[in-house]
Amino acid sequence: MSVDPAILNAWASGRSIARGLAPPRPEYGGLRIDTNSDVEVRRWIFPQLGAGIGELARSISEPRYFLKLCGEADELRSVLPSVWSLHPPGYFMRASRAHMERPLAAGYRIETRRVGRVVEVGVFSEADMLAASGYGVETEDAFVYDRIVTNEEHRRQGLGHAVMAALQRQKISPTVPELLVATEQGRALYASLGWQVISPYSTASIAVPEA
Image (cartoon, rainbow, N blue to C red; front, top):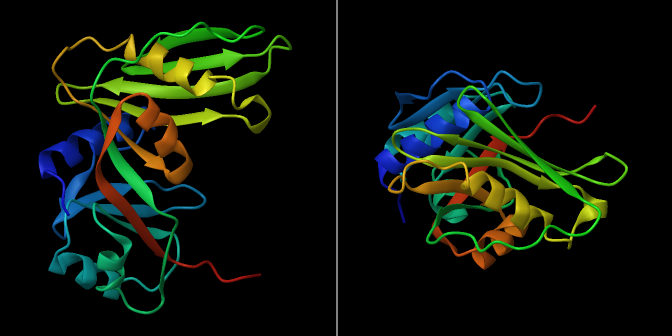
């Protein structure tokens, strides 16, 4: 299984804007993104399995570098040295229809703000605590959803749905695709909103040594 490289680049570019990162750049047949965080120095994202993934993996001997493939985990595992470990599965997804509006659960309020090209949505409880949040970015090529999170004690209230609907209302172009990468848990929410899986999204890294 593979993904159109143009679609993958559209998603990765929007995600980088949402997180204040430099744009992705081509490398090893995929896209390199310098994240420079405490847990991740750099990642490479590949639209399909290719020789460049194995070549790259053999050149890396330290943790905090991530390889991500639009494909099954077994495919990624097949080209990696044994020191690499697989992460829980993810899913590259695309919206297929508009999100249905639902009333916000009692006791919550929603706020939307825009900073440059980034839209931020927050849902707050009566105690003014952040209960759920998410980000969106629209480019010429895609509307990208990022970091959709509902805090544990506020789940099963439809807040994730509210965040997604609020972000979608900020979309201007009627034609650009809506894209995101979901965890296993998140996939169920997005499927209920009419999202479809384009491809599995597999991740591997070298484990950080235990202290």
